[in-house]
Length: 340
Ligand SMILES: N[C@@H](CCC(=O)N[C@@H](CS)C(=O)NCC(=O)O)C(=O)O
Image (cartoon, helix red, strand yellow):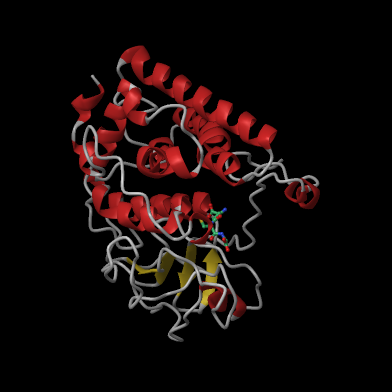
């Protein structure tokens, strides 16, 4: 049976898309580190990401909180895709460290050239095409040793990084590194349950609200998104637990974070999720600030890329500047008491 924490119902996807519903496709590359072809080793694997993409954000969070910055190398695409005038066509992820962001009027220091394949490809599409694939999405986990794509499914990439952190070259000593998906079956069951609801209603729910052109589809997604935020607010309030499953930060927290991080400054407007801000939910706000304060989290989160990337051609290329009250973002994430 399909794991609904990774992939939603694909039945009649073409018809549903034609009718205006946003239906996210299926990730086609699903090898695993630990398979005979892809043994875990430090320095062998590489990530291709765009920092505005929330699925990539999962992966950069996992890489940082697991101490894998030197064990797993990474390239960062420019937050805006190619334009209509691009010889390769529009809407493709590109490596463009020389690209100037309209928001800052500067290059973005995090953006890199493509260094993983040895080919210095300009487009993410070219990395797929080199092995005969016509996919084009990020994130991508790549094996520099065999020059093959390992996986383009973020949910599975973060599991691999967690499971093989030590042999991939984590610089965080094992006793100081908490597991994102620990071995205890009861904890795994509660992470799985949270993942499913968070994926369908919140992570992917934001896209269903913001990218569907059908009013009913939008309204259903809007209602489910805010129902699930209220449910999570109640869960955190019930016993004042610091993280979603209790005392420890786990994969469930990691998968919620990219969406809530984007909500007030980007999704409220861009995804038409203007029912409330995260700032309006005291427990969710404190949770957001608590996660933001964990080592590596602020470093793996790039709000300038998010703002720049979500307001491209479909928003005339101008990037909205707010909010500035009660605080600008991301500085507001350092102030958990704002929600009192
Ligand atoms: N299932 C994938 C979804 C990734 C995804 O949808 N990425 C978007 C960017 S946010 C993308 O690159 N889409 C392909 C495209 O727009 O060309 C995952 O979670 O890893």
